[in-house]
Amino acid sequence: MNASPLCSLATVTPGGRAHINHMYFAWNDGFEVFWISDPGSVHSRNLIRNRSAAVTIYASNQVWGRPDRGIQLFGTAGVTKAAEAARAYGRRFRDFDPEANELPYYRFRPRNLKLFDERALAAGTLVTARVTRGGLSWLKTEVWA
Image (spheres, one colour):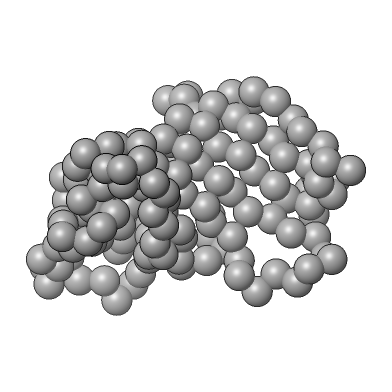
């Protein structure tokens, strides 16, 4: 999750269509993702109506044909209390000033994640795991050859 300071967040519009945006993020050991956003933005308004969300994180400078890696997270999101989110942001972004922030913090709580890391695993291998309070619980491994 350290591969990029940006992630992509997918939300669902009231009409059931997908919406995606890019944002700076921080996270904790439980794979929860935190961000700061304008409550009037499309993704923030979408989360009020439907908390279902997905996040993907990967280094955008990867080169086609070489080993790739990234993570996809599936769960729910919404506004959260500032304390833990501000701490996570402060650890990730040294110049972040929580006193100067006037926007709400959001938290994404993953239920499942899908990992691909072709350096550590074989090419085309995807590992899916459930995120639990105790850590990760393997669900399945897919190999696309």
